Image (cartoon, rainbow over all chains, first blue to last red; front, side, top):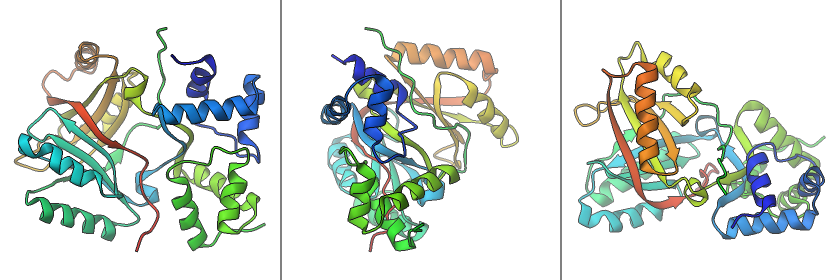
Length: 151
Length: 163
């Protein structure tokens, strides 16, 4: 069960982490709790894998090169190939989706050359073509995710 | 005022891409790792946020873990001269969390507009897609709904230079 403090942190600090020497103390003061409670709750959220991190979301385009890739993997090889793909540091999101193109992953790298090298390696090792779908335009502004609490 | 060198910026990116330290003075911790003053780290992060290089700094939530178990990527085959206008409209829609234009790859992949919808269950997501089609008049736009059924990996992007 999620504590009130955990919910407040999730609601208010998906963006705007204070850029001051003691950011967690600043959050604590804002919420009327102790710095230790804030830190303990954040650690707990991370251990419970409710958050992946307290940190930056980089702009894929400005921070480097990235692309979305899809593969049509024979179902009996999905586990094996997904595990192979996940082992790349350059791969951050890796999902199975219900479609002929059933494996979808995001590859990020410092530049296009490194990105292309990763794609070429994957294509060669797996022996099947990749659907390379780089972003051409983003329409949304990433403000984090608004959670609707039910209980 | 210390300005970080290109190499120090790369090191800072590498140090934060998996998250800030959960210690009382995270920027000081990062700074000592780089051998620079705490102020320089804070200034660099401010600069990156201002430039849009970092879109946001804070808790990065896993949707699935907070009860949003239905995650659909909805893809549309929109005529090229309409795709930007439709993307702008879609991003206003409360159900949509991300919206991108990507290239078609014919003949296998005819879709050029991608949006993400996260919902508590699939029925709700289907209802939201139906509402979207009605509200934006998309009845004649070919689309596909790709629910995710397994997550193999979800971490932050790796932009630090390697090798």
